[in-house]
Image 1 (cartoon, one colour):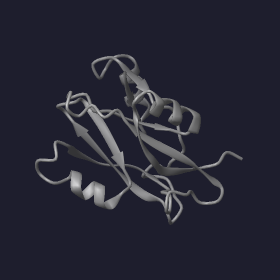
Image 2 (cartoon, one colour; image 1 turned 120 degrees about the vertical axis):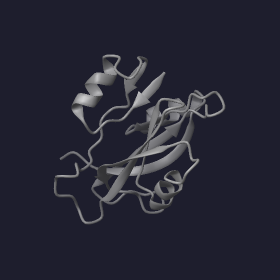
Image 3 (cartoon, one colour; image 1 turned 90 degrees about the horizontal axis):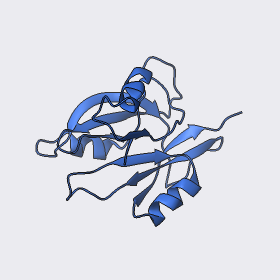
Length: 145
């Protein structure tokens, strides 16, 4: 099972309908800021990468991680800034926001890498209990009012 995250609704619909080779499931929805929309000053650009070998995308707001993956030989193709998001400080989100966790399926050696982003700590724990690697809080979304 592969999960995807898309800031573009038409891309998400295409994947659900088999446009990415089938077997893709939405990771869910969390709030972030499109590039053409005003964002808080603390919101960071989120880099999007694609690895054709494993047919997977990866997102990071970490400047070091983004720079590392843009290096030749990383296996990832930089696709640009997907959106902007708030990021945690020392693993904690800002007041008035809630965490978005990232998980990794650990299947690099099988050419089957995939990440999932979730907003539920219960889903996060369940997936880790089923073998996924928890990577912690990577984004913070505004809490609904």
